[in-house]
Length: 119
Image (cartoon, rainbow, N blue to C red; front, side):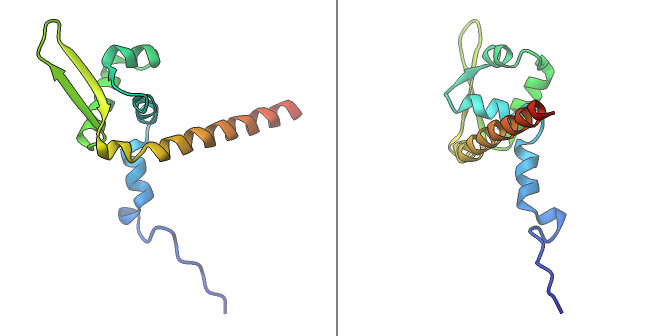
């Protein structure tokens, strides 16, 4: 009788991978977090970095990252208003994951390009 290996995640509700993807998943969050590794960014800097993101989507993504404790939003009391976004200390714990995703993406992209060249 062979024993089956236990699943990585016992249940969908308790899966740490799912929790992680809920927080950093989606089209934009990983990109926003990646650019925050370099330091503080203003809203319009993100608009330049990600020109195809809508203002509404950028606002929603940043708010979610702030709500999840990864991003800090600093509002300066001046005219015109100035707002900067930065990684919190908890947000900095995601840096190794984001950098590994970047490395994996570069490898995968290279593999796909090489496979395309062979066809």
